[in-house]
Length: 279
Image (cartoon, rainbow, N blue to C red; front, top):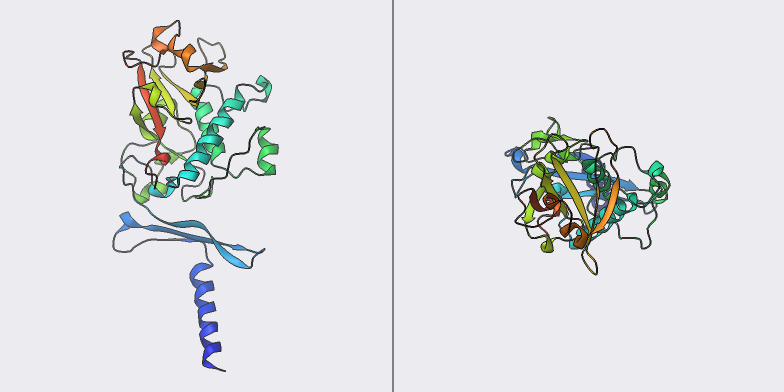
């Protein structure tokens, strides 16, 4: 057997055994910089395709979100914003009986739209969600839910910087209320609502016994800026989904709902942590 053939066989063995297994491998000397490695076999091309790029298990912003979840590609960020706003907006125009049961308040709308925006949007997804979109956004290429080291547990529920052990110790969960979403999964951008981008969040804290934390989703900034939100249950009465323009919100009959810096109930414009750190 020639030397060239032996070298070819050796390279094939290293490729298959070094890259063909789905695994998480970290630096033994420092678990804080463990790295994600994963690959999947593509039968159509007879090759192994990485389903996760190599990403460090770090948290460069110390906001509790692992860097391997951050959408650093501007194209991925744009795709997420488009899907997130389209999904949220659609819930407000569909018949009430068709709205997912999870959406019973503002946090439910955020969780649903966030999670669904991060999925693969194929025919199966459209059939399951009943979604209709006029223009199909691009797909997020970095990763898709729930194919992450965190599995289905997408939302940070504990305070603190991300550590590798958080992937399995309950620091992330499938459920998070409005207070947890704003404090542990998003970051303040400004208290000037004019600085909001589509997909950003408006958060409020109303000092009363009924639903003190509330959120809205900015869906449009050009033309007539708009938001969508769920009012949530109020004194036993079911809430409803609403779409309103920013102008209407700024002129709300109840001043505590106006998104202006002088309103102490308005916490500000927030942005999902996964959108921090674009390349």
